[in-house]
Image (cartoon, rainbow, N blue to C red; front, side, top):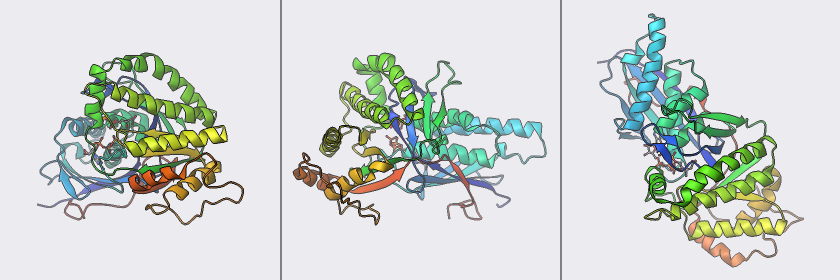
Length: 391
Ligand SMILES: Nc1ncnc2c1ncn2[C@@H]1O[C@H](COP(=O)(O)OP(=O)(O)OP(=O)(O)O)[C@@H](O)[C@H]1O
Ligand SMILES: C[C@@](O)(CCOP(=O)(O)OP(=O)(O)O)CC(=O)O
């Protein structure tokens, strides 16, 4: 059977948290135990591209991710489908001339241009793109904030990828999750010189998913309650202010101590959850050393649920940060053509032991040079063919 196919596409960005979401107070609605903050990264380097289409002749909802069909019958996808269809239905009821897309099955085709399920926040970009693509298809009037409440139910961190720039996920208080949504703290333009270097230390699927790891922490860690009740509320205020004031020193310090505390509560879980490895710890040591040598925060490290390291730094310090990394890991994929050598400062400052570079050379497989970027973007690129199947 054939017929008219309605379609819309979007791209969506990855975001990397600087104040970590770790723990759910409601696993069904994906409601967090604490608020969190992230930086949205440029889609020139990391992005999901998703096409959503609907047609009367489709027989079921389907999703193809990177060319492979995946189930959409899990509760996360179902929650998003149901909410989006309900919003479309409101439009159709108000205007009976609209095609009855809410009654049609959907085909979703999506591509990540980076490793999936490897701690590079693919679920964040993936669910944000999915929700935004369907919202585009349905021509929904809802704001990014409202869409973020839906994306949150796909994957918590996805709610933050509905915005560009600097984003907070406010945990909310309501039992139904109506006030647990993302808001923008500052636009990309407000603080445009934030850069990020991602050291890909492992691009393989991780052993303990974030979903499982965080609930192990909620259920067993005694340090965790102190983190959510005392530490995060204070840090949330300080980090939001640091972003608004473009105060990298405070932003960077908070980013590093929060990453470390997140991994500390993982270790305090039973059984303990480990995400960092020896290479990750070496990166921490190196950045701590460099910051000490310069007497200020030149770069801030953060690690999610995996060994990969994300380093935030300001454009003005690019020569210091990338000069050192280029000296340490010159041969990995991902370097651009710039030289990053300076006539005034040595690439490897006094006090940094170049012997440690051997471990980095062994452990890092790729560098991704990126920076703060915008939120989801509509695109004319379409990933489906005339039969509603992946091209
Ligand atoms: N483009 C996409 N479209 C829809 N769903 C996606 C997409 N990309 C990833 N996902 C979903 O997210 C899952 C991977 O999420 P997971 O949390 O395991 O990894 P991650 O997001 O890369 O890591 P982390 O969240 O710890 O940074 C995939 O199995 C898939 O269900
Ligand atoms: C360490 C983190 O990256 C955890 C992300 O967890 P997810 O958003 O992947 O978890 P689910 O809500 O279960 O899908 C920290 C963060 O992004 O804030």
